[in-house]
Length: 338
Image 1 (cartoon, rainbow, N blue to C red):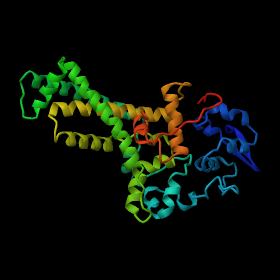
Image 2: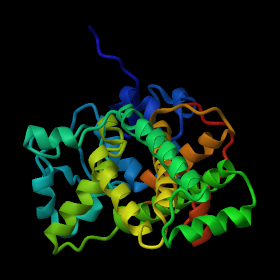
Image 3: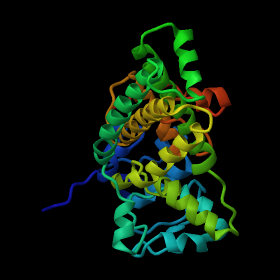
Image 4: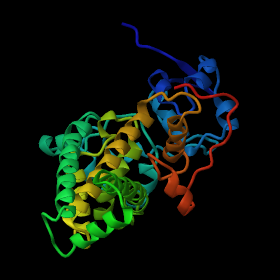
């Protein structure tokens, strides 16, 4: 059977971008008129980023990547690693080249570990997240609500439970309103945690001299920027997510009673599951023009392919605006259709 084809030309080179059509940040409708035509001027006019030019080389028909004479694309950095071998053990040797390599995207699947058991723990289909976490959230909401009702009815009493009774008195409302307040607080806390983790942990700057920091950075987030279209690595695996949830629980247990903690953590988990589903949708969904997710998808694409050091919000850009890291999206002549 003849392979599907959508060929474009750049100078004297030909590219088959058929597999990239639905992933193109500018949508299918912007690129459709250029089938079998030269896209060079269009790419320059629309100020495609270096990452875009680098990714473009993935689809070159003769399979040979090269540095462009106009300097738009970095040199071929893929020769520094072997894509047929596990990647984690290789990235440390990249040294000062690591940062440039990791933000130069490719359209490939990636093997992180040679050990099949470890490798399986790093691969998470999107539907695993709601399957694992929604029952846990339901359990925590029911348990936290029961504990809260028992405290406010005087069935349980510890020193820290005074906080619960004071909040209940201030709200002067039914337990259901108070429970919703704690859950909503957890959701809000998650939005800040989402931003903070993405900006200050996932996008930390590993020194080229520290192999350990390069290994950590690549394992927790760098690989997503390197292979942004690998569907197996778009959501957070349950094990590290559980570690973060437990850490959050221990932190709040310092100054909040158990019933409050349970409800706040339940809210934070609601925020986390929502974030992970939105993140997957922003990569593979096709939101309608002018919808909330349409603008988020454009925003997240800019983070991946042009503005790596800003635009850290995924489910919301609230904290980007507060901390001054928001990306300004330019106006388009027509809407994008993915």
